[in-house]
Structure formats: structure tokens, C-alpha cells
Image (spheres, rainbow, N blue to C red):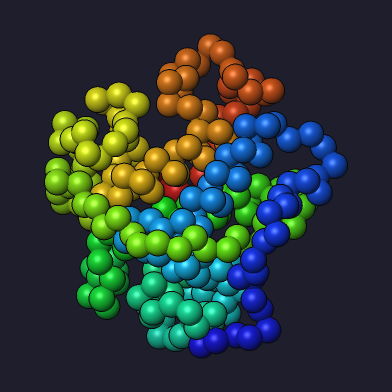
Length: 257
């Protein structure tokens, strides 16, 4: 269902919405946002730049979807209805985006398989989830500091790489992942250590999406190499304060991990 009154997919002019903030913002935060938006605009592994930006626009649209609001208030996530979309993406993509954005705590493996049965590939699924993670981090940040959302950039022309890691296999997760022991040189850097936890492996079917996500997430939270240094902090607040905030945000976002 198209809703012409709401069009968040607008090309930016290169300026950052973070410039409107009246308090200082760390340089690495500014740089990480700029790099993430640039990555979203480029051809990915399975999606073109234009399609990736259509995903970003639909992520924002999902917050205004009345059917998603009905789902959140329902005892069952299996209501029949139609999402209010921008009309640029296929039904499988819209369902994936709206459900992950609006009701992530009630997703299931059968639901995931139903999305794939609608024609979306495993790689496309993972790449879209990676874009959702990026956009939601950045948009939550701009809302928190009271500045407008960053206008979406212009897409970069080109074809997706269509690279699938040879070591990807379905084992502990709903979709294939690459275990650290199965990673090969062609995959590029993925894990900070051979014992990287499953939270690091979630996007590994699309290594580029994994790298883009952690490049942004590490700046907003903590890099992997300092996670277990509980006696020190690299931020302006103490480590216990950081973890209290992280736990509260995780609970509010229904983070099953």
C-alpha cells in the first residue's frame, strides 16, 4: 500500500545533519556516519546502490506504518494485513524490513523461511538486515541529539559483486553463516579473533555487510579489542555506565542476544 504523503527518500546535498547539533560531536562519530551513508549508496554484494537506498527509505517508512502498529499491539504476530510501503520494493523486502524494524522480538525461523519462499535470496535477506542495522543506529543517534535525519544520498552506479563465502553453511543459525575456522582470504577481514562470538557472525554470509556494520557499531559502543577490558573506559563515561546504557537500549530494542 503506497502512502504518497510521506517520502523520506530525498537526495542529500552532501551536508551532514549532525552539523545542526549544538553540542560537540566526536570526530570519529561524524566520520563513521559519513562512511556508513556512503557505503549504503554504493552497490553492495547482492543489491544495487539504488535498491540499497530504497531499502533505507523503506526503513524510515516502517516507523509510520499503521499495520506495523497493529502488529505490535496484537497478541499474535500473524495478523493478516498490508504494510504501508513506499511502493519501490517487492512484498518480500517490505515484509522483511517492516517486521525487523517494528517487531523484531517475535521473528521466527518459519517466518524467515516464508520470506525466502517469497523470492528473496539468503544473501539479499542478510544484506537488507545489515542496512536496517546501519540506518537504525544513525537515525536513533540523530533523534537522540535532536537533529533532523540525514537526507539519503544519491545512489552510486554499478553492479553488485554477488560474492558468497565458500565456507558459509547453515548450522547454529536460521541462515548460513561463516564460522571463523571456515573463513578464507577472499572473504576479507571479518573477525577480531578466532573465538569471535555469534554476535560477530550474524551477517557473515555477506562479509561486506558485516564489516560495514561493525565499523559503525564499534564507534557507537566499543571496539572488539577493548570489550573485555572491564577496568577501563575509552569513552567519556565509565565502563559500568556504558554497560547500563547498553543493556537498557538492548532491552528496549528487544535484542534477543
